[in-house]
Length: 115
Image (cartoon, rainbow, N blue to C red; front, top):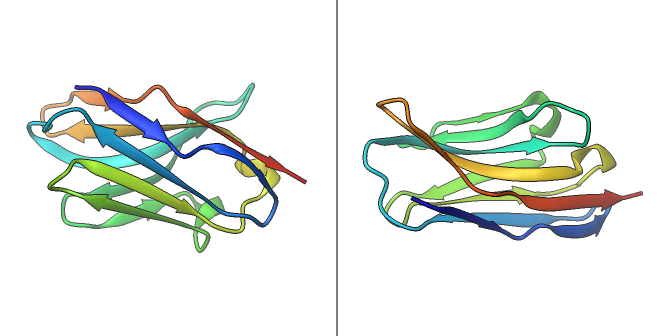
């Protein structure tokens, strides 16, 4: 299974970007999809996650600004990012988790927010 992320880019602070991620095939036993990010010199952090039933979780720093959504039938997940801040910059990775413990990760897409 390959996860392909897209939609990153350069944007000014206060702007918006939408990230998209698609799986190359149906993921057996999937229980959720999400987005994580990693800035240079920092650990990767989970930004948002959405379960099969549509329950969402966000890291506190993006609540009210980011929205995660998912198309279960197509195994795609999107992240709408509004009011972007410089500290949102980093490489964003999508992932899919399964009930049997396997996780799939995409290669990442770069988001750069300029001041």
